[in-house]
Image (cartoon, rainbow over all chains, first blue to last red):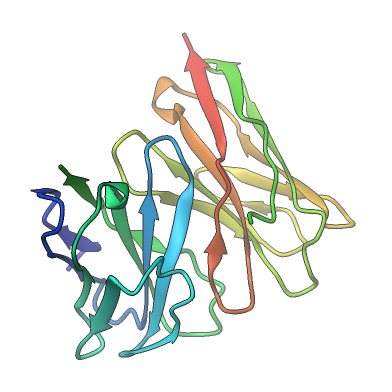
Length: 115
Length: 109
C-alpha cells in the first residue's frame, strides 16, 4: 500500500483481556518497528523486526507483550491480560532495505484504552 | 535514555524562520541525526537527516556543527500548519531511534 496501515485505529478493552494490534508495512520494507507513546510523552521502543526475525526485543515491557511478523510483511503485537498502564498509542513504522540511513514511515497508530 | 536534548517548547511568528536546536554531545562517528515531527493525533513524520554535512530538502534545512555535538533544524517560512512536536533523534547501531520528549513548536499568527 501507499503507507503504513495499522488496525484498529482505536481499541477499548477491559482489564485482563487480551488484545491484538496489526501493522501492514509499506510493501518491500524489510524493517518494522513497534513503539508506544503515552499521553504527552515521547516514543518508547518496543521491538524491531528485520524480515521475520526480531533481533531486538529489549523494549518489550513484560512477558505479557509479544509480537510476530509473517511473510516479511504483516506484524501483530499481542498484549495478554491487559492492565491500565498499557493504555497508550501503539505506533508501527517500517523502512526499506539497505545500509539503513533512511527515514522511517510511521502509521497513524492504534489508541489502546484499558478500562 | 534519550541521547539528545531539546528545549521543551518554542514559539515562532508565522512567516518567520523557526530554528530548533538539539544537543547530541555523545553522538558517535557513524550515527546520523534524524528529525521528525508529530502533529497532534498523527504518527511521526520524517523531516530530514544528516551525518556531518548540512542538508536541505523541500521541508527544512539541517545545520550540524563541525564537532557534531549539536544541530539546528530550520523551517525557513513557518506556517500555522508547522505547529507540532519536533523530535531530534540519534540513531544507534541497531537502527533504533531513541526518542526524547521533543520540542513543542507553536507558530503564532
